[in-house]
Length: 208
Image (tube, rainbow, N blue to C red):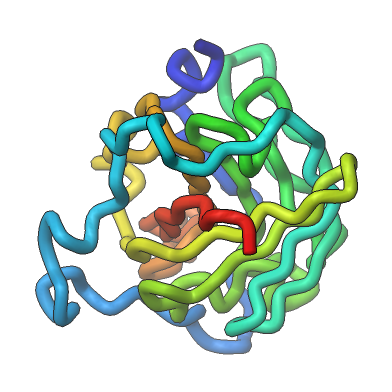
């Protein structure tokens, strides 16, 4: 319920502290219209039946690995602030992912929300390469109970912060899904913020 309450503000304001550097723009997702399987076929299975779909018991995530973009980072827990806006990881640590700890844990049934900076004043950060992921790329999240939740990417998309699709990103799901979110698009030097959010939609794979 908390994520639903904070969804609108999060869509507009998340990761406000990202600061553009001289390293050039971060990789951007391929527009949906240019993808071979664009449209409904690419969209994550938001209404998948729980019968037979994999899901794990709740357990705190401790590390995220995304082999294709060489991400290997620990987690910090995130909460909503007094204004109902989801906090972001501290900008002083470029290799740190944040998990909304009052929401679904990665691997459990529902939508797990993970945030990361694209860059900071120190340079490119943990989710710098997020926009270059492609469908079928994998995300591995190690959990406190010793298990690993492995997800397959369904799609990677960019949304203007003033037109963020809250229901699609945060809406309830009957299977185990993952959302990775960072900043992207054009950097607005006047506002000191990126104009878009990049979102990775992924679903949990069956155990090997």
